[in-house]
Length: 128
Image (cartoon, rainbow, N blue to C red; front, side, top):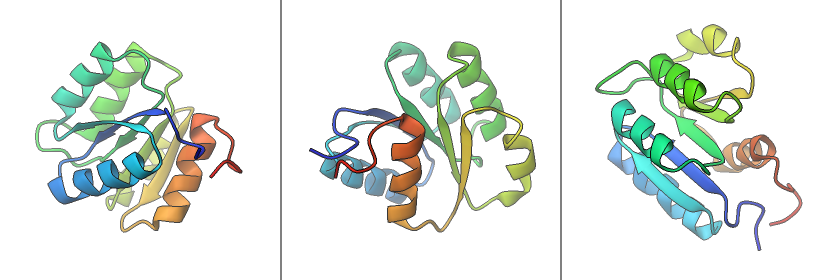
C-alpha cells in the first residue's frame, strides 16, 4: 500500500480539470478524496468531516479569498496541515506566518506535490 492509503484529503480548487486530476491521482494512491470548488463548500465539508488529515487549498476561489478559507479552517482545527497550491505567489509571505502550511506553485510537478503531501500528513514517505 502507498503512503497515502486511507488518508482523508480535502481539495478546495475551483478549476474542475484540476479537481478531477487530484481525485484521480489520490484514488490511485488509495486516499479518500473530498473535493470542493468553493471556499464555502470546502469549509462546510471540513466541518462535517472532522477526521480530514490534510487540505489542499487554492488561493483564488470564486466566492472568497483563500486566506480567509485558511483562517476559517484553522478556527475549526488549528493543527490541520494545509498545502496551498496556487499560481498566485503574492500571498506566499502571508501564508508562511501560519504553522503547518506549505506553498506549492502552479504549475506543479506531481512527484514533488506528492512528497510534500506525504511529509505534511506525517505518513511514511518510503511506503509507495
